[in-house]
Image 1 (tube, rainbow, N blue to C red):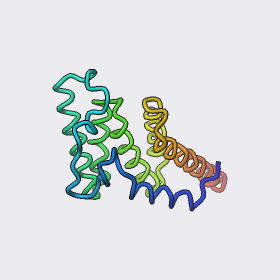
Image 2 (cartoon, rainbow, N blue to C red; image 1 turned 30 degrees about the horizontal axis):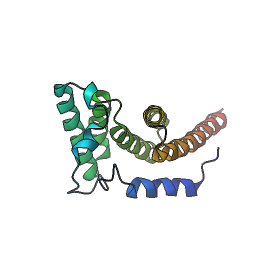
Image 3 (tube, helix red, strand yellow; image 1 turned 120 degrees about the vertical axis):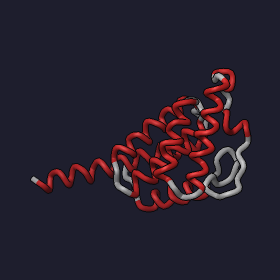
Amino acid sequence: MIFCRTGFFVALFWLGHASLAGAGQPWKPGISIQATDLIGNNLHKIDPQTLKQFVEAYKQGRSLLAQGRYRDARPALARATQLNPDHVEARLTHVRILLALGYLSWNLPLIVQAEKEIQHAIRIAPNDQRLSLVAYLLDGLLDRMKSTRKYKKKKKK
């Protein structure tokens, strides 16, 4: 698949304007998070202590994201996805951060990690079109990054 510039600009637009669970843009201050958005649909699977840790990590990650501190938000959201692996919104927010950081630094391992995260989210919510869109964009970006890498290796020889 060829990942064109237009596709990436669509992705950036989506990253900047898509809402998370109807809560608005997570990086804008003053956006409240509904308790159901934090917990997701697997409340019965999580013990109270883990749930508390998840909520703290997710809120911290979204707060750092609201401040534009993507690098700092990444570990908090990674922890949130570890504590509640079936929470699609936390996983999608983490993927958005990985995608932004990976593209801006042309970091293939971050994009590969984002691809794994989005595939996990698709297994949880196969009908969520946001996840399909991100998977499509990641697939194109991965192809582009891998082909650029091969070109650089061949050129060095």
